[in-house]
Amino acid sequence: MMRMRGPAPALRALIALAVAGAALVAAAPPAARAVSEPKAPEEFVALSSVDPTILHEMRYTAAHNFVGEPIDGYHRPVCIVTRPTARALRKAQRTLLRRGHSLKVYDCYRPQRAVDHFVRWAEDLGDERMKKEFYPQVDKSRLFADGYIAAKSGHSRGSTVDLTLVPLPAVKTRPYVPGEPLVPCHAPQSERFPDNSADMGTGFDCFDTLSHTEDPRIQGVQRANRQLLKDTLAGVGFVNLPEEWWHFTHKPELFPDTYFDFPVSRRSLS
Image (tube, rainbow, N blue to C red; front, side, top):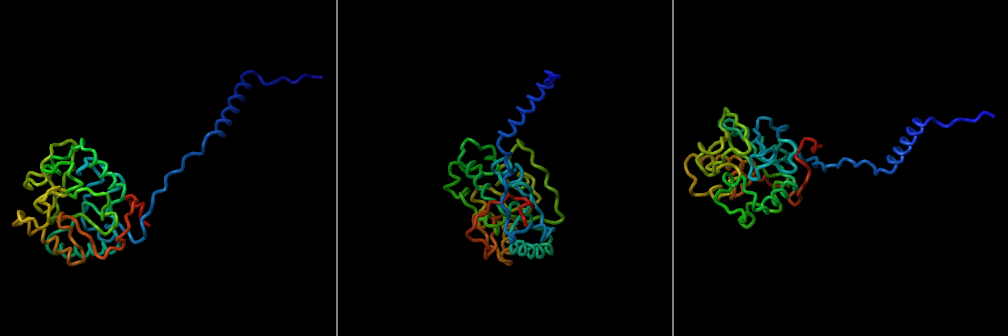
């Protein structure tokens, strides 16, 4: 009887490797699933889909802000707000266009993870890379006590916006270069970082009492610009935060008690 030969040594080695590989695959844990991000309720929209003429300079998507880096949750430079807020902004924009101005938004809906990022930054007293521009006269240890940073933000409810006026035709704002020399946000407009907005007396997100909408030291054209912004928005249902000339909330809010955490991205919208 003829005796069957086993596989050649090289073939036996390949078989052994295949068996071992199969065992490793079988023993490996299942691949991690992609994290599913929360979605916005259907009442939220991109502002540009309601009024494409309103200008955008979404500061927290990039590094030109008081933290000095892109903020958690801002995946794209898109302004997301509740539908009534967007419609009210469209009405305000129509009024302002007739007066030779446009609205420009700096921030709109803000996810809770972004607010958490602000809190972590504020607790790190050693990180003062943007102090010279955004809080030159405020000790960083005072940011919570003075109300500049908080654990919750009305922006996370979807009806609050930070915005300004831009004279038309709008001049393009140059890009911020990380590490460039900083100028205090309360300096004369000609000295501050070039922004195409109307002169409001301070830059956006200036942690200073000069940012109070009715601060008596703000007079002339600067006061007139603040008043035009405030009056126009009040006429369509917005209420100004007295400590920040740029901060407005549309009333009544659709979600007065809910703080959302879906990311700022068109993918978040229904």
